[in-house]
Length: 207
Picture 1 (cartoon, rainbow, N blue to C red):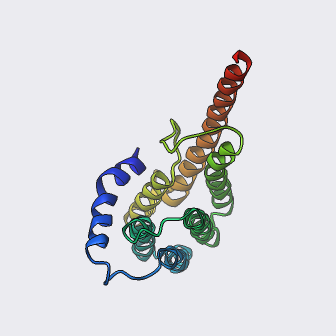
Picture 2: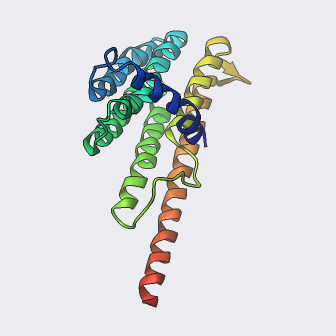
């Protein structure tokens, strides 16, 4: 839902801006994508050092870069299948780097489970595409990357002013919510894929 909102309301304006100034924005979209990964490194360091305000800044910059690289590619008419693949791979690296910061902050189990859930949720859709035909649409599931980012930023912001809630670590609570959201999302994707496979099998049996 949040992803669709960004795609439909914000990205078209950014793309149009880039298209109006082609001489200013000549940088390769793939290079811009890589910058998002570079920005995740100081974000993870800030998390590990419990400098959550700085972490929010670096994560916000990384997320902004991730938002605009596709817009730049469309404005330059340089969209490609490799560009889409590269963007997805860098996104996974960014996710893993960020949660590594929590690992060094002492949240070993939570960070591990959140990373596993994030990777599985992200892997489910492309793996489904290898099994059945799917379309570029929002799935009826939770745990999209934008949702995870919103939860991450909200947790860091709250932790910077309220380290504990009812005696429970705010960061730990945020990570456990991420664990639940991503693993539930992964299960939802499995069930959705199962239904799609059954639908295609039923069509094949009827022909």
